[in-house]
Image (tube, rainbow, N blue to C red; front, side):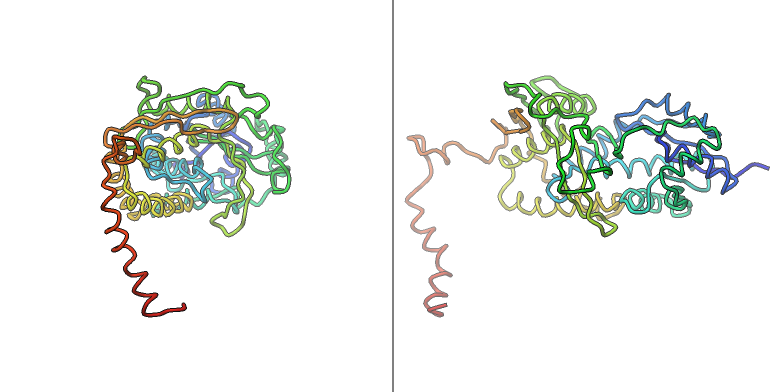
Length: 397
């Protein structure tokens, strides 16, 4: 008689490695692992590890194109940054992982999917709510959360079963994809302490960055970055290139005490060089091409969008509706932005757009000025009418 099947999102780390035998023992099921490349993994190495720890089958998926196309760049168009600091790298990857889990479960005939998230983080919510939205009939199991073992107990469990694990020596917990790297635990849990250099991997300390700045010209087409310095680039290559060159100049370090969905405050260290640069350039181009009302309304909606992503509500009609709004705002967000990268700072040095609302002949104070200054008297009189009326009718307030 065939066993039931469970599809486990497998990273190859300690948690998911010990989750494979634990699921087999506690659910009497075949465990199929699914490893997804979102930009930073060696798929074959992890696939072999999954088989070594007892997976009946080890699946791999290259999800980089889907991540950039369906998640990162729509969030960039929206200007979504959680609490004005976090570009949502991990949060944007989780719904895609959930989508692949559901697809694998359907293809393999599994009755459940599983993940390696803990019980106090945001990722358990993001994955489980996303799975429920895509297939509410699938059971979702959280072995690490349900198990309740600490790291040392997991190591002993693995050693007792001769699992080929590498528990590692880092005191930090990390997660990476193309859009960014998150770091937590260890001394980072004390918000008074400055993060040590060991916490960073993508960005150089300012003392090691070049003394001379570098300039880049980034081209956008309807809010989507499509080229650098006149060279057309695909999304994956562009993000990788910007991560490397911006990180070399120390750009992209974020030290954030954030409000987790589960109700606690958490000190998080992020590295997101490409995201920081692209958000800065995109916002500068929008300043040229959106009206004041569009820009201010979009800023409010961007905060809402950031909350949706952070809180695991990607697969909702609300997010779909907001996407339609943001796509509409990007119709004329086409042009070039020149940025200056130097000593940890990305500065916008120039911007140009075919449909720019900035008109030189209206803004200039030189002879080319075409602004009708004589019209200002009437404008001020009408604009100030309610102020004068109220102060005349209600003096002294």
